[in-house]
Image 1 (cartoon, rainbow, N blue to C red):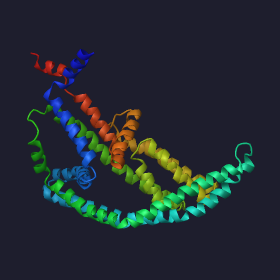
Image 2: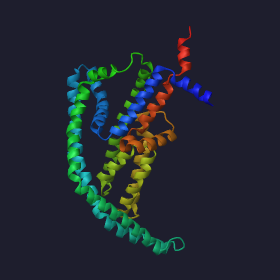
Image 3: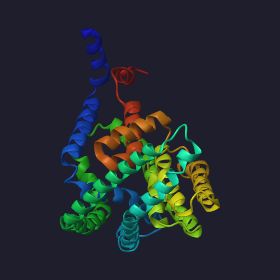
Length: 358
């Protein structure tokens, strides 16, 4: 048994680049796990700069200098950020507040609707069961109200933190874009000259992750916009809030759409009941999900990520459990990174094959 383990270790970890990969992976995980909260602005700015680099490179290939290209892309980024912070965020916040305030009225409507079930299905549902469900919901809402009160009391430090992030983040994004070459050269100085595997992994991951993340941002915007237009046209209340939720749900494949179906159905049923308007809302939502899965996703992500659905779900659970929202958002890119590392991992067999005379 010891010999077997020793042979496996020599086969996969005898190459210097293999040990370098192990050190880099361990250092990266330790850095994010223990210092992730403090480095949130830096990591977020790094991700945003990575997304914007494609646009900067495109402008450079059309004859603009890097500083001019960075200035144009950064101005567009600030415009979008200002719209999200000044335009969209207050609307969604107001909608969420109204939704919480409407919860008691919704509970009363739910109770009236649910009390009809024992009359229709007396052998399966009883009135005491309905009352128990209503009481459970009311207790959960009470806990939600207390949490909201606690959050409001602590809102000043939170607002200060958000304000600092809103100022510090764009500044970091600008310098990451402007000084990209200098930062890359500085980082390369700490790596060994013989880094064939690292270069191979980077080129493989850069193509796939870059296209995936940019495509996911486009997908969130398109799905959210179409959802808002559809729900607003059909007269559904809380259309902006639900559109944001539906747009963000595409971050988690397979799971997100299924989870967001419930709030959409509840909001539509409470407002319209079980009539034709409710059916139209659900039909519109189903069409949006169908077009997203069968038209938009193949168009944006064709041949970008080749992962089995089980691997995607496991990646979402693992990385989401480790790093929360950002772990969920980057679950598929991180799974792609793991796949590329395993594919390019140097072994003793590879070294012997390279050293063999031709």
